[in-house]
Length: 300
Length: 330
Ligand SMILES: Nc1ncnc2c1ncn2[C@@H]1O[C@H](COP(=O)(O)OP(=O)(O)OP(=O)(O)O)[C@@H](O)[C@H]1O
Ligand SMILES: [Mg+2]
Image (cartoon, rainbow over the protein chains, first blue to last red):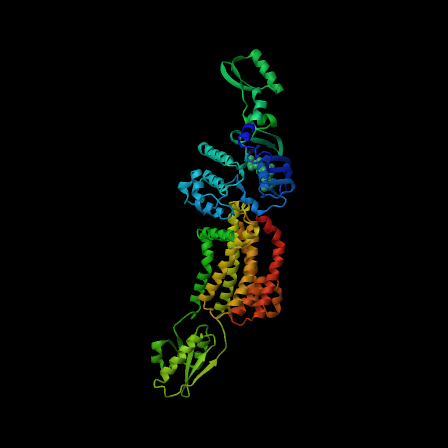
């Protein structure tokens, strides 16, 4: 974050695109607090990752931030608008891509985008340019209903950037896409961010978060456990992983040990004293491993 | 405005790719055509006359009109009284008497008068005495009740159009995308309601024209259609937002058909002193207006009073369902 921030100039520093204070959200249907007393800020120009396992409350948070869910408790400002008095015009500055793709099946890809573009008061991007970006230009005139899941997802994704949003919400933008297209999407996100878009990225894919995000928030059971840059997190936790290759009854086995967790330390000690170690090295932890370490939980 | 047009344009585009919606839009015309073919004489442009078989002019008449022969005066009158445009011609005391029912088009009547003048008086020297005997104004029940039902159901189906459209949006979660655009709630409701409003209007006008209700008062017709359309649209929106898939939506829609049918048949068959049991139903008031309008007997007082009742009941329904509708659009 530190490097990127400085390269982007100073005028953006300190300005918040999103400011959330003590946000809670309750679903009456099943009487759960999906989000509990969450607070965070997203700076202008930043890519902010919202990470957590299924059911953590990511989509709920994005729902409140995009006005799709009512603001029940807490204060939320997005792109200069107070969400307790939402105005429709604020959506000229906002783009939202959904976890579940939602396009009109009876319209073609082109018609879907042309229609959506007409809803905005600001200049919009050219339909064919958008379709080309995600490799849908060849099927521009096919009905979206005939598309595969991944194609619909890509259409939903490019639709969200049609108004060149200043504030771009992306819920699982790469989930379910094959790796090549996934990395294309990542490139688009990076490019738009370089042009000035602030990105709120929801995902449970740590690698995407690691590659793209300036800062990440770990959310579990509706609560934020930590917010920091992937780099800081790795500095803090990464050096303390030890990978050991050793032989167990003639078979090679690889194990990882954390140097801050007591049971790992004891186990490593044992191994050094009694095991047949072939190789030992320290390793930078992946964001996923750090997540598990911090929250005590996996991402699935 | 631009956004409302975009919504309507999208609905049309999507609608014409959906056979059910296409069918709903053309159904009134098809049904009107079927009814017309069942009602003798409706829209028949050829002049039809009925004469007694001893009439000396039969052969000349046959060259210009469809001629039916009857043996006595009574059956001639009965024939005239049937629901189509047939004129009776009786030769009495050296003059031709035209027997008309009163619902024949003036155009045909004028034509017949000219014709008779020519036939009976080629040299124009002998004056022709034409008399009218008005046997009472009556319309074929099939034409009248078929017409009323068709108008009411066409308008109710406008609500159906909204239901299907909204359910489709909900099923594919596309409403959410609209809700994160600058499109306002009001624009959304107007845009989504527009076709449910316009299609029945066009359908009813077309049906009225096809069925030969050309003399009706268009102003009263529109006011009545608008008021029924309003309640149909509100019903459409509420069913649309409360259902996430078409099967259950259609089931709810069927439940709405029940009071419509009940009101129409009730109004047709109940004795006048029992009509109060139908006062709760907006479709009853709609029936009364439509009945008067198609018979060309309605006046503005009746139409406005009934529309007032319809709108009043609509407001009540709307108050009850407003929250559900607004929440459902989220
Ligand atoms: N519409 C809803 N009605 C009731 N409960 C809901 C609804 N949507 C979500 N929840 C509940 O709220 C909690 C958080 O769900 P949410 O969708 O925000 O999680 P998420 O982090 O986005 O998960 P995922 O990674 O699966 O998308 C879950 O317990 C879920 O069951
Ligand atoms: Mg989610």
